[in-house]
Image (cartoon, rainbow over all chains, first blue to last red; front, side, top):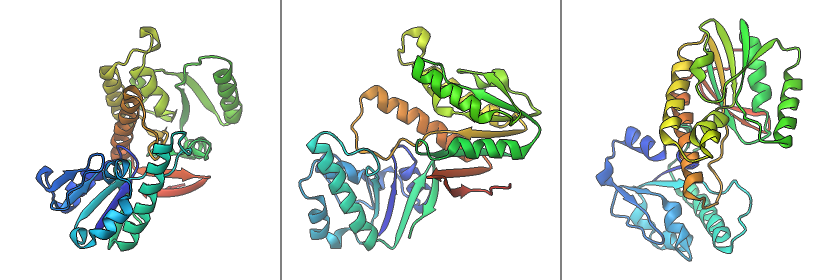
Length: 120
Length: 176
């Protein structure tokens, strides 16, 4: 599994397309609580985490399904602690999930202004 | 040489940018981009002017169209890209009503500028890693700034991220 992280609008999906030759058909775009591991690239995992009570538990339970995937997750961990409980939970859940995925990944890339920084 | 510098607030981006511009030599220009909206901004501007004192910069004001100050022989410090995009996207003269075309023109101007002047150091702000759900206009602002950041990072020789004064060089060399 390859994990691509980075801030909003940094070019994470473009990096995946350019580097791994994936097209729009290969990409599943997550929405609140919704995810589908049948596609090669899973994009906006933070949005799945936004609407799911236990995103880390879900990924652990479906571990076999994403072993060969390209996972893209926006880092949402660096700002001020959000005022709203929902956003606080989102930030924590997404951070914990990112740590788990990063440990599992064969490669971790952070995208900064369109440029790749290899973290693992 | 062209440099693109980004990172969090108060991490040393401007200090690095000034040092780079001085080291690059030639006729130095500081592009002042911020439209003051009151006492707080005036203070900030005064502090920045004092910081640059004795470094040999000529200050040129430019709030939108950066090509209007381009000089092929000049070394330019553009601090910062964020203000230029903000001024274009939310024009004060139109009561801050969002103008996407103006932001596009501003971005195109910056790319053209990078290819015109002798040396340039661009400073931007990294505002993309928090857990806030912003309003549509704020998201548009973040997206416009990120788009120009990526375009500048692509054309600039060197791309540096500054964190607490420490540098991560994402592309090219420091060369000083």
